[in-house]
Length: 89
Image (tube, rainbow, N blue to C red; front, side, top):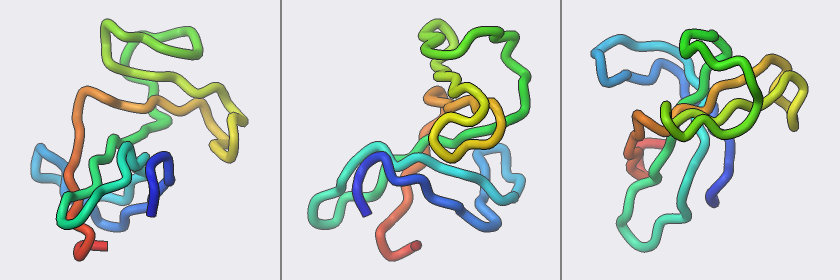
């Protein structure tokens, strides 16, 4: 798996301890024993952002509805990154 791969993670444990299904975007192509570095996405608007594109002050990138294969407006959340071991996939 390479960077920019979109990964569907079933029953992922979030940093707040809750579990749920989540779309993640892989940010790197790990070498040797390095983990995958991923950011999560959401279609739930909770950031007060009304434009597509980069919102660097909130570490969010907004993909408009219908971008690539995202059917809903999607918020890529760079403020909360996850490490996933290669063996965990």
